[in-house]
Length: 305
Ligand code: ZN
Image (cartoon, rainbow, N blue to C red; front, side, top):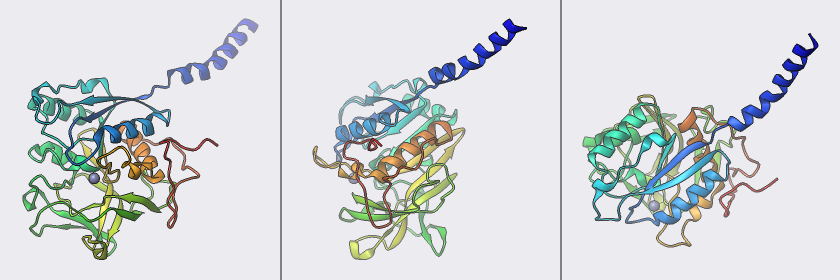
């Protein structure tokens, strides 16, 4: 009896150690390599640091050939990853890669789409379905409605017109429209975002889509005069997609200040974890911005407590 008791105790004691050792990180790939308007190398480096500094992710950066190069050479093995973060503004991926990516997402793979990644590949219908809304690259009313928040609800506006607009970069106030979603739950529902390039007037299929946050795009700032979606989710088969329009990185190494915003970093980390696993384990941080005060993490990691 005593031997059995000792055996049971040792089994129970050993369980936490086994669990801790077995806790797997989210295997993440950043898809990048071209973007005529953004310093994608610096943006990807920041995203890698932001994710890895949470301790939840391992990140590899997988680049396409350079602009104008032979795109048929771009054949990442998506099956090696739990999550694909797209930070890309270039030529449409080759057909074989598109089909593999569609299978990856439909089969339950996670996807995060950052800022200018809503612009490329308008000629790939499944990419438009995955992103929900897109901008420029020839998009117009044939691609789907404009979507914005008015009078307490989201409006699908089918009036004709081009997709995509931005005014001068500026500070903005982000308003959460769903405070119970794992990505936003527990965070200040209204917060000040540091200087960024705010996209508006996007259009797309907007199916299986849930908008998490908007910002007021004032006409006096050259904006659309609408509450424009800034973060949303899309379900695609078994896969989950998190889109954030925040996170502009300009054309030189000094110009990734938008990514230094704590609000961007925290929502990106949470959106990435949710897209990969369906849950968010991160607690709301003490330094999250408030309605009137932005906060920055220039080292791309939370301050040590
Ligand atoms: Zn930009």
